Length: 149
Length: 105
Image 1 (tube, rainbow over the protein chains, first blue to last red):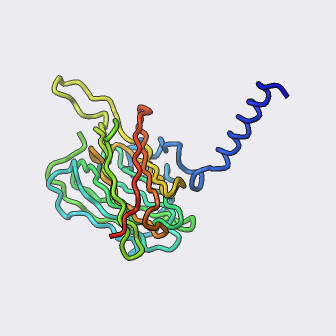
Image 2: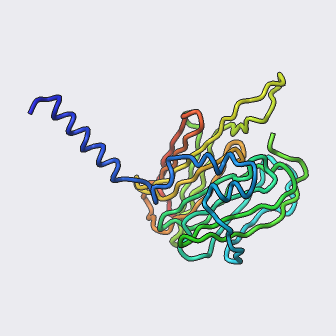
Image 3: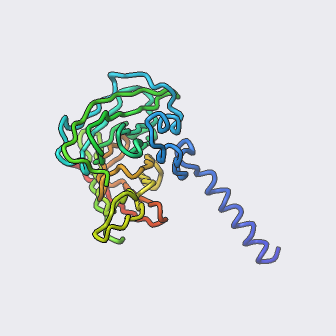
């Protein structure tokens, strides 16, 4: 076997190896452009494939009742729904409502704290994917100065 | 963007809490600069967390995450000395990564 053929085969084997290491549920690595660029909540939910999420009291969404500065609103989301796979965050009145979608593997708590921008007083939603179904919790956040410049 | 990240991973009562801070402008593409020009969108799109090199969490972000993003997440299966890594990629294809060791509280 000549050298170039050998390296070709080695490269092929390495590539197969990389493909075998596909990430969690093979979801990520491709940014969900339709969901994130949607200017409506319905469009964002459709982009996430989250059809008619059911309200759930097992999603704990913590955020300030009044945010002085919409550019930095710290939020905390915890899902107590068994087999939670993902948590998405949506601010209804942002120009593009979908803010983030977190996907968890086993061993990682379905819990995140992060800081988001809110354009104006709005409903804030956490949409949870668990066992192939979708659940949702929401709360209103008053925003004194909008932060979506 | 070297040294543009901070990370801490602390193990307490079986739960490892990881806190990450990233340096990034998170421009929405709708903000006008001092010259009245629109700043092009520039934001982190993907964030990946690893435990000893294996992916354990993946996040996709839009423009609604605040400038200089902050993130906390929790792991159940990490031990003191394990390696936690976080890396991000933005819409311009730029990225940064950081790794730390789990410290027992």
